[in-house]
Length: 119
Image (cartoon, rainbow, N blue to C red; front, side, top):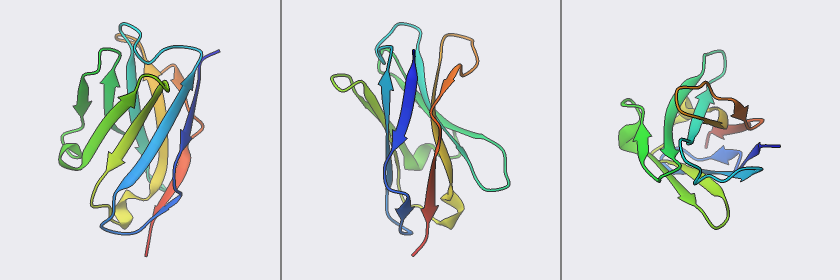
């Protein structure tokens, strides 16, 4: 029922801003006790939590990425988005959007989208 789908460019140039959108169906991104997250996996590495926006609209970021990361939402479109500025090749990864409830694991995930940072 609940589905998430990432979309956005698959190739970004160094120093530019990576922008992705997660389209949600089957539930509202404004639902109480909901968390809407971006998680990435560089090649050969583990998952890295980037940040989330809550159903109430509050955002929270990984300390290592906070200075470059912004998560926003469009409640009318039931979408939330990721912006990662000043990217480098080290930001090349599969990017996932995912959602959880309060003190649950991420129970729904998008399929992931490959983003390559290269000139």
